Length: 337
Image (cartoon, rainbow, N blue to C red; front, top):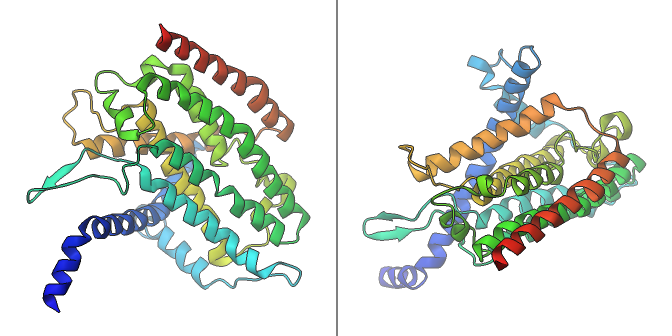
């Protein structure tokens, strides 16, 4: 029996290691969500010259635990007219797609332990960037289904807004990333990092970086692009009828998408884990850049007001999309030369 177990492990070592890495990454992402909530509340307090959470534990560090306990035991109410199956399925789709999309993100160079080399990623895909785009964009189904299943006009409107916003800004996101793909010649995210060992792409393609980051903020439904929620117009949008842990799952997906988008910006434009002469371990360099971009997400929410919906669409189709096409044509011309 023991010999059979050892034979099974040796024959399927790659699959077992991949499963272990997937579980570890999922757990770390879920544990990052309470920290990000605490960080956002603390930073917004500083930005807006007011106190953040500071009562529950030192510096309010236990506040996320208190919030989690509150949401865990809060009653989950479902209206009689709601579609029960889709109502339960929608938040699960949002969280699942957010976690799976991070599986193709490399966050460091391979490390050697006891003579064995381990890649710091769940899956090193040749089409890694395409995989992240494909899976993360499927999360919109959760928002649309949540709004539809609630049988609430405000929720339905929020779900439709999220779909229209995703279509509009996904084009800019993809086209601005194509500039990096053209210069790198690969869809593999590790290859993109290796191509930036000397100089990061933000220096070579500053417009592409700006377009990608703006579209990324819109893709994650963060302020000032949080029109699918828009409390003043839609009460809370697609999650109006949700409460308890189902309500929390929508925000878990949002914060994990923030981490994924910050990681993508880091890999495509900031050199990934390259530290450019600084005495940092690769994984610390990568984590530091991601942390900085998350702080920028929070800063944008604290600073800029929500824009009007028609201006959101105009900005996406008439400003960002033409600029991203010009950016792609320019670097395509440079590559051809």
